[in-house]
Amino acid sequence: MTLRAVLAGCGAMSAGWIDAAKQLPDLSIDGFVDLDPARAEAAAARWGRPARIGADAAVMIDALRPDILFDVAVPAARHALVSHALASGCHVLTEKPMAETMAQAADLLHRSQAAGRIHAVVQNRRYIAPIRRIRRLLASGVLGPVTSLHCDFFLAPHFGGFREVMRHVLLLDMAIHTFDAARCMSGLDAESAYCREWNPPGSWFEHDSSAAAVFELTGGAIFTYRGSWVAEGLGTSWESAWRIQGERGSLVWDGHDDIRAETVGPPRPHLFDTAQPVEIPPLAPEDGIGGHLGVIRDFVAAVRGGSPPETRGEDNIKSFAMVMAAISSAECGARVALDN
Image (cartoon, rainbow, N blue to C red; front, side, top):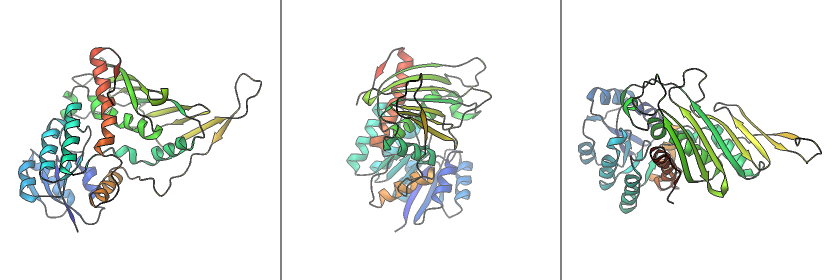
């Protein structure tokens, strides 16, 4: 049976969704919705198959009664849009962040559970090979328990549009990818956050575009984050540059394809122990990759009765909580505990 979807929000981000959906048999996007009709028409043209065009997502959902809502709308529209879709019987795959507040996120989880529908979030950067390989290495225990993770994110994108007037833009729109990657690779969750935000001179963002944060993780590990969206020159990868410490060794990843790890050998009577290189494990068949395609494939499989998707709302809310705790800390200037 072909699953039928409506895609709401046809801006630049929708291209990745459409291109991935094209690769999945028995999935049809039957409607495209955007406040700008020209963008909806362009998205439908990219899809290349017959589809309805509209400006009101609720009207489109009520008319087509789709199985799935692909929510690529701006964050301010998310809660109302997803609530209507769930009440109409749709399974929902949504852009991040999953909501604008923790109360909204918790409400959407309650609504999805009450409706018996799957609600998941596009954390597409989980679905890249280096993150899967690093997770496999850390889970093997060769470096010992993780004691700290450190990452740097420095880029200077000129987006235009809503991001340049959005409050907490780096934390809310981008850092959730990095925070989610830390959880994914380490298997640890955050227990508290301390964060400082600022907007450097010369910034083209209206609000704070740079941040530094420290998270306390389960088991006593620490995760530090340094980031900026107004860092001209010497940019990092979009995946950040990482250093991960274990009790018996270290791993560094440049955010591209260079992953290196070392573990210490037997203790010797020298200032430093001898370090030995560690081979990074290859991907395993069960390691889902493919970015948007990997997320959407797992989501569609779950809708068809398979295992719950990895990025389901019940899990992703833990990454979203890191974002909201960091924002709360930046606003109050104090350490903020995460409410489990």
